[in-house]
Image 1 (cartoon, rainbow, N blue to C red):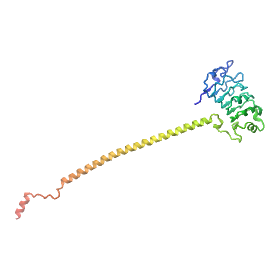
Image 2: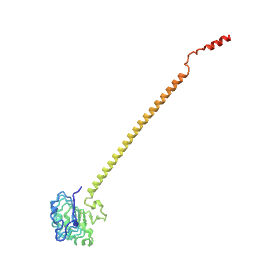
Image 3: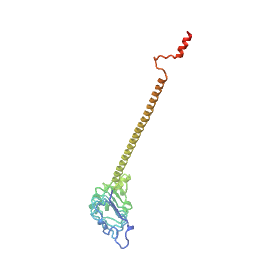
Image 4: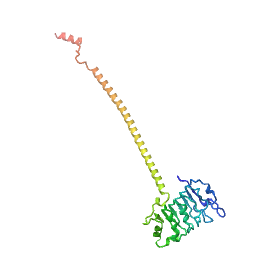
Length: 265
């Protein structure tokens, strides 16, 4: 349901040509784009170019391994929630993120050049920030690193995928779009269950109709058999009546019987 744009260097010129994400083509994209993934599209100058405030509905921006040394040119993106900046060469200048990405909830700075806790202080001005990743940054080698970060950024829920009690984040909590995906899955599950119930009801209704039809046919057959038996009984009774003399009727004497009586006299 999202409008996503993915760009891969495999399909773009290299060498002296402009990188695929600095050629101005991005400005022609619809402002309805919500996800923009430009991983591995190298920046020759180490800065963000081609992304403007026209991406007013952008919620996810991924710039992994593009050779960034600065985020100073990132535009104001009021709806951006998830920013992927891992495997670059950024060492500071995070103030601009607090100023222009006010609704940011997930920030991945893994594999960059952060050495001191103080370089992360600007993130205090991101009240919605819930997840921060600093894997493979030198700052993670400091004593009491986790305690210091949670103290500096009390709004954080997860640091490097774990909360303050070292409980790992679930997939839905660790990903920026997890909640939306769960809602969609629940909605699809409910729709599927409703369809199953409707199918079961249709099957039951069809079985009931078949039973009714079968009952009607049995009734018709039984009715025909009963009527035939009744007709046979009536025919048998008529035959019996024809073969036996009627009650109360006097038997007529034959003339031969009368002659026998005269001889006897």
